Image (cartoon, rainbow over all chains, first blue to last red):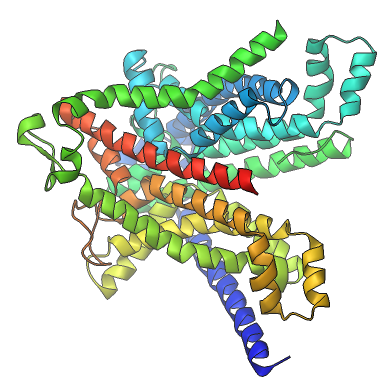
Length: 285
Length: 277
């Protein structure tokens, strides 16, 4: 090996280790900052109190309720729709067929759309045209549109990972298409479905821009699904930008949001591992 | 019966994107009719109050700001993401590589509003001490780069990991150095996956709203320097939508349409790349 080659190797190794260390350093800085500042303001009362003084004092209880309601609406719409679409894509089309490909490409484009454009669309369709106004329903429906591509992709992979033998066996037993789907394929594709749902939830919880114009800003407890409600991410934005002195509670709210996402991720991977261990088919994504 | 129901569901899902474009187009139509598309590019500034005749609707400063933010963020995050991916696949011992990948996965899931918030309370004051005001193009570039780095690293790692092991063995058999193997064999083989990752990162950066809204200062002016406050196209929509009426609101929908068009082009290019590989 020549001297130049040895030098080049050493330079690349140095660059790689430097990059990894720097990146890890910055991100650990961010995470420890959040942890330190957030836990200072975090307490049980923070989770169950109402916000006072524009959010500088008090807690985030009504906001948590709104967030969960919006998430609930989103999943209630997105889960059945994504299941049906994924079942169609996986069981009724081949990968190359035109119908399947068109749907898949349009879902890819949907996945890449900026969230603010979803906000504009949600505002135009749900708030104005359908007359739902600023409400949890509008917000949840807009989020369902955003989560759909992720969920469909993961669920379709889950379906495709089911071995062909399962289908052949079902056909040999004379089961109807519906029974095959619900009793054999769906349970086997459950890991993929879980992954998709977790991804969808993650996307929905993290969304801010799409919710500002669809579910509103009000930070008290919503009366119904037609009432306006503030999601956790919007609360963090409001405390950071519009409320001087709101940083402390914003840190705590950010910590709660990240903790929520982590808990959902861990629960889902535990559940997926459990399903896999019991012998269900592949985990898709 | 079942097939028909499933096909209908798939059709609905596939139609969403078309529905979106149609609705945004419908809401932008008044502005396109009253103001005209060319004025969005030729008007000198953005002062939309006063209706179609009296107001100015120049989007160029904000488009420039969005492009500058994206270019800076990708220029920072792409090489770093590639180096981090190489760290995981070729340089780190297995335990460290797994931990690093786990860290990247956690970071990829952190909401953009949290990144924006941290940028606002930590990065902006730091930059302010160096060169006021802190809220600037630089702050936006740094926060955006932080946001797209984990995804880039993860996608790049997947692309590199799918290069067949035979390629590496062949390079070893030929006596190539580490640099030669990576630069001459592995990276070119992973090229399309890496380009797709970069394109998706660009799409994410252009479409990002909250993080740039929080750290960029939101002054409508073409970026004159790295430390100048700027306003991105996405942030503009988020800020003004709350109080915009009639033509102003319609003009905001036009800028939304432009964003959507940019992203559609990017995603279709990524799809074409993926189909070619």
